[in-house]
Length: 276
Image 1 (tube, rainbow, N blue to C red):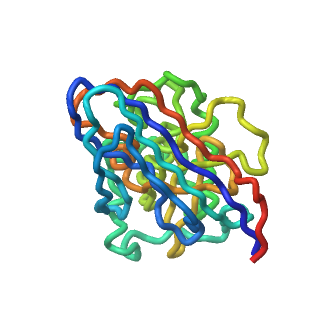
Image 2 (cartoon, rainbow, N blue to C red):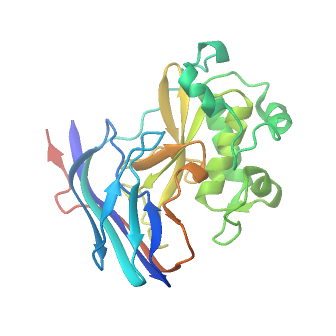
């Protein structure tokens, strides 16, 4: 199978009035489709950090930001298959009694995905459709068409219900809305946060950013859906997975430092194709 290599990473420049504990969740998550060839984490001025594993298996890192300006940087070279994400229109939704117990949490409401509140809307829109992969795609199509992408149109506290009502959002809002509808229909669905290069698609003129998508559990396996881009893509590199964005914040600070600058990198490496 052909593979391709991608440079991913990010930089955060914070200005703090006093030493400030922080947690960064930006490092590549171990994944069968992604091989990490090199990775590096640094803080300038130098500060000790410690990586840990959270309850979802993600790899956040703790650090105490020094007073003044600091630069936190992560970079990795990864290898991914030169193929689109898997899709299977024949995949069926499992009845709740057949869903593994540890995955039932992904059928429940969460802070940004109030599936209990939106259950009536979900069943009215999608309840008469066959419970399979195609119904999930219908949900994703709806979220993609219902919302208009616009930076600054939602707030950090905006839920799927909020953006459903106002019709605008950013990529995390697209994911939250589709996740909410899926869970309202008893489909286990989790939020995914990561890097996504413009690989074999027209380049996006907007600055590179992190991307939100979702994974849906059907027929005993997870399938990736991207409500914002509404297409199966190449080169998606997950950072973290959880119930919604509250579980996988890219940066959490225990204080009030000013985020002066954030930069995200997700570009194909010069050695474009490697034959295994």
